[in-house]
Every structure is written in structure tokens, then in C-alpha cells.
Length: 175
Image (cartoon, rainbow, N blue to C red; front, side, top):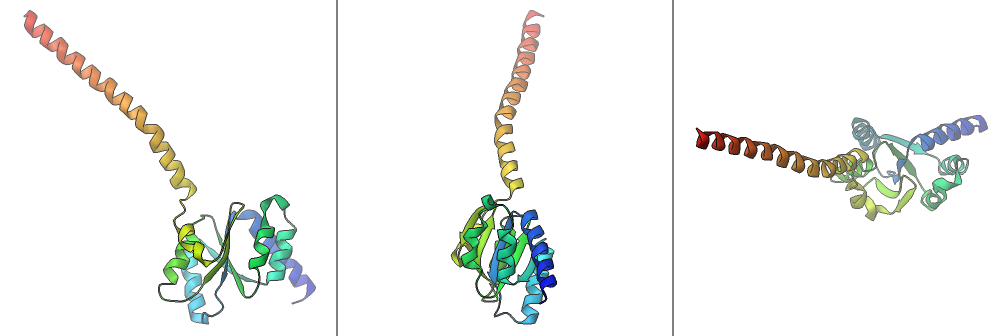
């Protein structure tokens, strides 16, 4: 790889890291070409980009970004063969890994970067797969906020029905 190609690769990775708040560092080295293509296909279907990277270039791209992002916590995981799964949803790559490993031994999770939090090790796949998306959490919050309002509206609506019944009874009694 020429110096110019390395600079281009670093620039591309830098853009990907800036754009994605969620990415997973994995090892899929023992998979055959057909298995890797199958994994890429599953990733593509779910909106996840799988990219094989050189560790040194990934580290250089991370080092060139803001220190407050906490990328340095990932450097220990950037050893040996590495493929990065970039995603817009925190749990999707973990779900793909979990599903894919029903038939294969890999990919193995080295580390995951979830909006400045870092999860190390393959034992974190279950935890990461159970994370709720931002939309799911917002939906739950909205449901919780709507519940008391709906109760109040039901009580008010029910109250007007009772008032009309009392008025009807009163009119019948007076007639």
C-alpha cells in the first residue's frame, strides 16, 4: 500500500468514525470467502457496513479525531485481523453476530463503541443485542407520558356521560 493509498484510507476511516456513533470491532478471520460474503449480505440487509481494516490505519484515523470521544480505549482491541461493523443502530451488529454464529464460530466481538461507551470482549454480545434503539426508548417515554393524560381524558369523558344520565333521570322524574 502506497503512502497516498494509506492517507486515503485514513481519511475514509476518519469520516466513518465521525459519522457513526456505533461501531463494532470484530475478528472474522477464520471465515471462508463465501461465509464472509454471506455475513456482508446479512449486514447489508440490516443497514450495517462491514469493512476490513488495517489496525494501524484505524488507530491513526481515531487519533486524528477529538480526544473526548474516547477512542483510545479501543486501541488494545485493534490487534490481529479486524473488521469494523458500522451501524446507525447500537444493537443491530450484535444481533447480526448472534444470528450468524448459530451456524459459524465467527465473527468474534473484540470491542464495541456505543456513543462514547466502550464494551470489550465477546461476552458483551448478549448485552449489546438487547440494547434498545433511540426510537424504541423515545416511544416508551411517549407512551408513559400519554398514559396519565389518557386517564384524565377518560375520566372527564366518563364524567360528562354520568352528568347526561343524571340530567335524563332528573327530567324523567320531573315529567
